[in-house]
Image 1: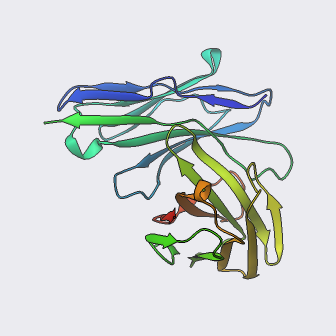
Image 2: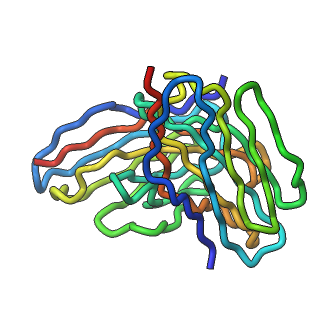
Length: 116
Length: 114
């Protein structure tokens, strides 16, 4: 079965704290893609990152970093020195490589509140 | 710059009305999607289209239909709106020649059915 689990429904932190959002996935495929999206209060989902299953290198983009570990089927997202503008719902998603599969398997999202 | 637009941000309709939600993308993408988003249920795929006049059911197609007469436009139709279709509707597109590319989303339409 293909599945994405974001166990943290809501997280609340104080500005400047570091915070990690967990994402655990299940797939039998050896080729797959993982995504993170941000949904701010305005509603539009914004793409953050894509990772393919053959690339386990961690990624850093400013205050954002991603830790991909195939051994634990996890693709966790860390925000360093969080800011109020980071307040949003964050979604992790999986695309498995089955032929012409275009669909994403979505986690239920983690709502992050960063308080001043 | 990539752009997906949706016809309305907020919509209020009555039970039994026929409702059209429009989505337009300007990226010449082949694939377009309609999702609904409800608290605690995440994003659920209603329908998607991989080419003009081509469509496939997603995970929750019941009560909905779609139309794709032109490549840039994908419409979601609620034939007879019901209160349980009150939700946030999100349109997305995917293209660029690779199915592993990211989907681009519109701003969403918050539909209330009274």
